[in-house]
Amino acid sequence: MKTDSIHKLADSLGISWDGDKTFMKWCDQLVGKKHLDDMSSDELLKVYTHIRNGWYSKEINESSFVLGMMKQEMTKF
Image (cartoon, rainbow, N blue to C red; front, side, top):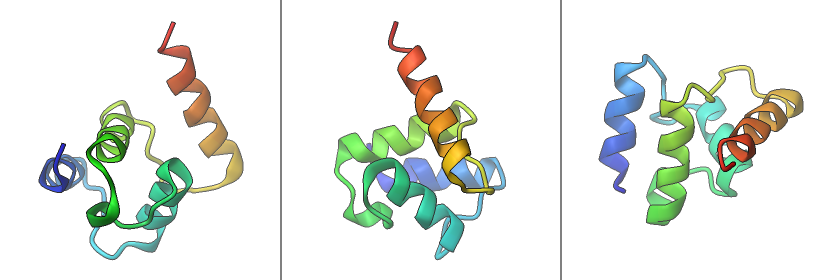
């Protein structure tokens, strides 16, 4: 997975990502890193999958993050 794939997906969905503090906070909560360029391929894939599945929310708070993580865990079964 490369950052370009996330850029294109986010752009197609109208998600601001370039220097966007909310996006960076969401990424940090999801994989522990704020910047896509600092992420491994597996971390990028996790970000991509969450965005593609509609689990990105501009309203970042603990409850929305927990809900997204619960959805992710439920899809494993």
